[in-house]
Image (cartoon, rainbow, N blue to C red; front, side):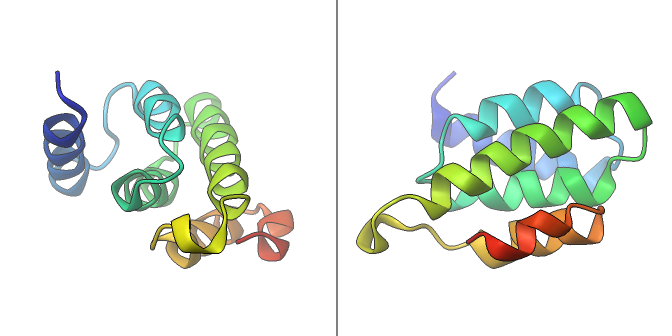
Length: 101
């Protein structure tokens, strides 16, 4: 499935279905796209919604990797969504995310 379509469909599903099945796998796929605003916003939503302890740790791990990769992009390639992802991670207990992005 084309990435634009995937991001649109999964983002809509996440917005309407908190506790998305396989949120960890969705976060992993989003983490492969640090230059896309949609990936950061999707990861932020997943972090904010995830409450299953095992899956939650995996979602946060992928989201943190995405935050680090996006923050490392050159300024002209830095996507919007960094503040939202950083805030979601901090609210989920990842205080180290405060120094990122």
